[in-house]
Structure formats: structure tokens, C-alpha cells
Image 1 (cartoon, rainbow, N blue to C red):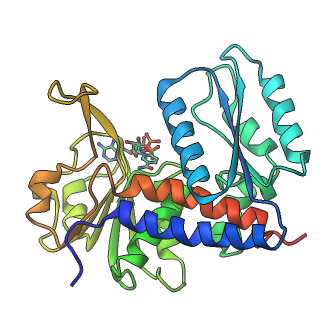
Image 2 (image 1 turned 60 degrees about the horizontal axis):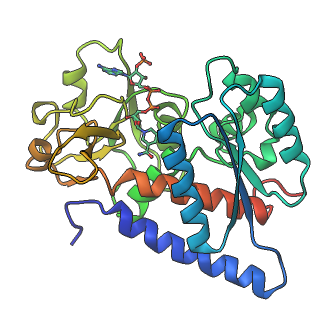
Length: 296
Ligand code: NAP
């Protein structure tokens, strides 16, 4: 029987083992380990934490990882030069520029400067466009991870009504495309909601699968959810909590306690979508090293 809590941490651990086995086989065959570079500009605490988690995840599967740092005052030109350097470094299979960037740097310009063949975040317009057309591409890590989470949890998606809350370029919009494509593990009917959606609750109550990616802590309450639905919570929020050593605990966009009682399956925060996002980046890096998306 499928458990009620969709355990992203356990599923991610299983995928990591699969990746580690592939990397070990590459090394056995005298092929160098995949190499991922993360570029970080400035000293944003959350970005540092995300990059450290990515480094640890790489290490755990045998992927080489490096971090290139620029000070927060670095110019757009300096960052563009670093991107060009990485585009041409044959030792680097894929790289990411950790977002958000300081306000004086045009994020779109930086993303568009990345060689699509090394764009393992899947944010470059070429990868986003190819994904939309169903062509081989790097898929953005969070929606890619959610698709894998649903597939490996054996949650039926075909023919279901999926309501996605949030239309960001990195989560909601690409996820709505992936779910609605004519493909195995997809074929859903998708409604994409945002801050201008009228009668939101009337729509969420129709969802067989409800994905919350709006960045508002505890926004989805039990009265917004159909009994027996599947709920995927993408949100990550630090909630002050004096009882915890760190002084906070993590929570999502869903009021987990209330909603849990009503649904068939739900992802927790932490331990749901988050671990799958990191593992998707590892999958993309492995694909980059194997040239399995863009053949040379
Ligand atoms: P984002 O760029 O801030 O976009 C939020 C989206 O939610 C927008 O489309 C916005 O609509 C919509 N929205 C805001 N208020 C709403 C409301 N009251 N009703 C309906 N829609 C509303 O968010 P994001 O980058 O996709 O991130 C969403 C959340 O996921 C954040 O908590 C983030 O930290 C988390 N996240 C987690 C992971 C992970 O690995 N677990 C990865 C990425 C993000 P408009 O377009 O109209 O403004």
C-alpha cells in the first residue's frame, strides 16, 4: 500500500544510489567523474546554504563539485566573463549560477549567456523551449523532481485534474507544461493559478492533485482541498521556533497538520520536494557528462 506521506528524502536517497553506481562505472571505465560548478555572487545566507547542500550531494555520489565566488559588488561584466570561462572549460560538464543575483546584475542576461549544453539548471531559453516542445533538454530541477516524485510514488497523473498554484519560471510554469505533455507519466489536465486568479478556492477544490508553489507559508488550508486529493508542497519557509536549536523550523505553503487529515497523499516540508530538487540537479549533471541530451 502507498503510504500517506510521500517521502521525498527516501526517494531521493534511492536515486542518489543509482547516480553513484553510474558515476562509479564511468570511473571504472577511465572516464572522468562528472564536474558541476556553482557560481555564487555575494554572501546571501540562503544561497550559501543551498550551494553547500549541492556540494554535499555531489560528494555523496562521486560527482566533482567546485564553487566559484564573486563579491556582491562584482559587475555584470565580471560575471559574464566567468560564465564565458566556464562555457569553454572542457573540464566542466555543467554549471549553475545561484539565484538570486544582486539587483545591479541582469539575471536574464546571465542565464542567456550560459551555454545551453552546460545549463544544468535548465533555465536557458533554449532548454525551456525544447522542454516545451518535448525535445531532449535539461529540465528545471524542482519541476523535474516533482515529476519524478509522483512517478516513483506511483501517483496516477494521466487524466487527472492537476491544479498548480504559482506560475514562476522555475517551478509553476514549467511544471504545468511537463504535466500536460502527451507523454508517459504526464497527460494530466492542468489549471495554472496565480495571484490574479478569481475564485481560487473553487478551483483548488476540483484538484485531484494540488501543487502549492506560491511562497506563502500555510496558505493552503483544509477547506481548499478535495477529500482524497494528493497535495505537493513546494514552499519552504523558516518559522521562528524557540524550541529548536537553530531557532526556527521549516514549513511549506500548505497548512500540513490540517490538510493531512483530508488527503490521500501529501509531501512534508522538509523531506518532500526539497531533496528531489537537489537530486534532479545531479541527474542533469550526469546527463551533461554523458552527453545524453546534446550529442556532440
Ligand atoms: P515566486 O517566483 O515567488 O512565485 C510565486 C507565484 O505564486 C507567482 O506566480 C504568484 O502570482 C503566485 N501567488 C502569490 N500569491 C498568490 C495568491 N495569493 N494566490 C495565488 N497565487 C499566488 O515563487 P517560486 O520561486 O516558484 O517559489 C515558490 C515557493 O517554493 C517559495 O516558498 C520557494 O522558497 C519555494 N521553492 C522551493 C523549492 C524546493 O526545492 N523545495 C524550489 C524552488 C522554490 P503572480 O505571478 O501573479 O505574481
